[in-house]
View (cartoon, rainbow, N blue to C red):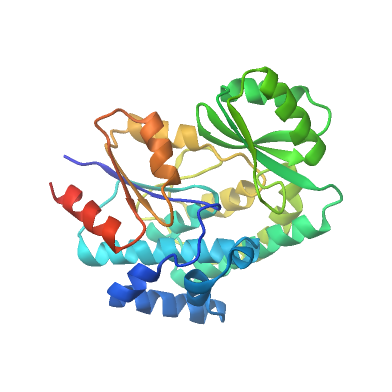
Length: 313
């Protein structure tokens, strides 16, 4: 028997044309994109379908565009298959896909929230007194990375615990450079600077958290009908006030993705479905899950058709 968790990815997967396959093939996708465009009073659908790389990299565009593909993909899946996940989870901004899918946020409130979050983060980047940076580190245990980060006097920390030997570091440019140099000596296979506008998931984002809190404290949040495993603590969450606190904290906290997957595996999840652009979370799952685990991704009609066939078995 399949015990299913649905996952929603974060920033970095964006590309021109995302979501177009859903739009072209499913009425529910067209209607959902139209609702999103109306809610945000701008053509997020056009940004997804035609946006150039420079546009899609801007935080204020990236976050609602990726979320749109996730929400549309989820609605399309529901329209073609009766599915009852045990858990939802999302990586960073993907957590808002999980909040929507779980019923914690309506579509309108979900997109208003992600728009406010993106704007607050962009504002924090533009007004920061120190330039921020991020880098992906491959081949070094995350515990070692955290230990070394804590020794450095210029600020640097862990943004994402993605899988045991793939970790994203974040902080000041000087801090990220200093830690990168140490980790190369510790045997890092690769260190890849990320093309981001600031130090996300770090204390440099605390001003963004304060700005977002002012908006989010008035947003209506429902009790989730299915637990969301939240980034800040990798714990199942359904209560509105817990979401209100955790989504503010998430902006400047580490994403506990390894613990998130470990928790769901411990609860007997044997099927993971990533909905949204790209295959990043599917790839991470393959590195952390037993070989018999069913891992699927849904990003267009072709991958949806494959997923449906697998889920019907």
